[in-house]
Image (cartoon, rainbow, N blue to C red; front, side, top):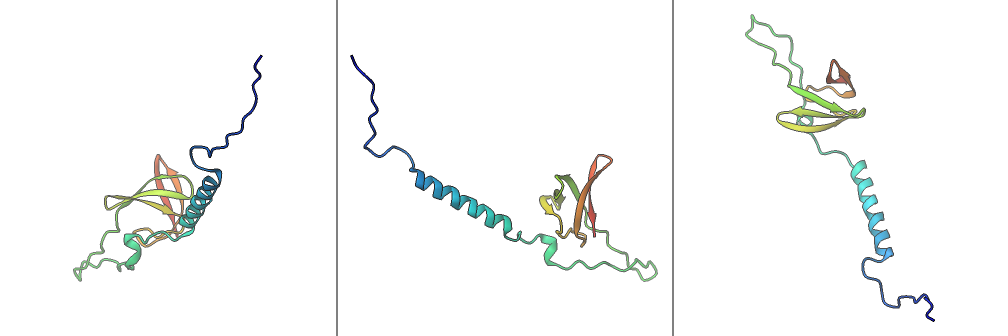
Length: 118
């Protein structure tokens, strides 16, 4: 009669050891935390100061330039997707918008998203 017994594997198991897996997970989570805390790269409209033009005066031949056109297409509460100049940007609360204002919130009005600014 044969009985099944446990025989420990004396050879090293194939694959990644548990220590290497734990170190990899810790380093990946540390890099993710650093990426989240690091400041976002500057946006194209953040570098140049946006000056608001004075009121247009047709007698002097000056016309106020139109504000930059951008559109908020989606928001999840504290972040929003903005289309500006053919590119899509992630905008967080406090970020500077192309018109020089800061985003303080996002809301949906009549089926379209808008940014509340300060």
